[in-house]
Image (cartoon, rainbow, N blue to C red; front, side, top):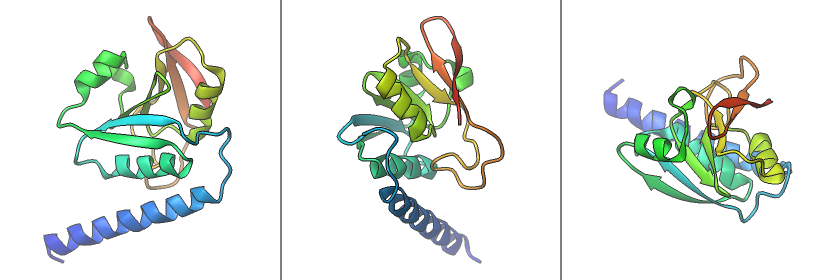
Length: 156
């Protein structure tokens, strides 16, 4: 198979997965109303899993502004995301950062409880997390980050 055909097939599969995920989410009830919340997602133009996570969030009614940049490391540093908790994209929602493929259950808890922290993170790009292909292999550990350190926020 030629490289061009392989790329087109990959893009088609990602688009179909995004549509399926969006349709699945539309028929689920959000843990708390995330509708009409506004978020900014900082991502590179080359990451398709970020687009799938954006679709996942939009499925819960979050209004998303996408900001594509070649390098988002300065955004992460400015927001106070510890390097060991970095993922492929960074979202700012309700004055918190949400780093990576964080499930809506954790985002809902963050918005509902409004803790005195900078944000939350699901480090890396774990298989089976929202926007990532594959089956979930282990529980997702989401961390909260405050001024001095980070600790476990919740396990999903």
